[in-house]
Image (tube, rainbow, N blue to C red; front, side, top):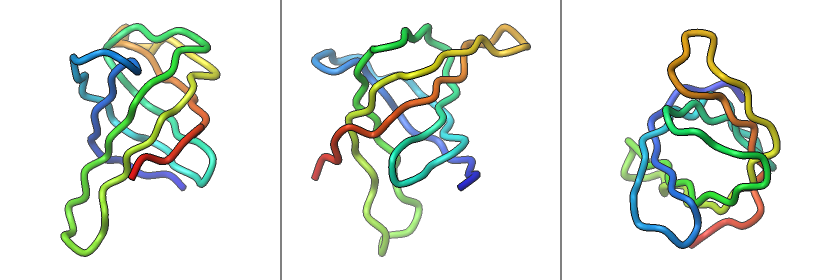
Length: 87
């Protein structure tokens, strides 16, 4: 499903949060656009806040499967597989 919402990510086991734009979301994966460099195989904790109080935010551990530099040079697009949903 094509979407456009703000979220945050961090490498699993680290503290700094980095803003991301979630461009695509499915039951098994997501496409992230971010300013930070990401590597294939990297494990990330991703949080997508909800703008509707009736809808729970999404928290997941994802694995980066594909990384493509953005044409404008502003970071990368990363195709990620959802490995675990965090409650």
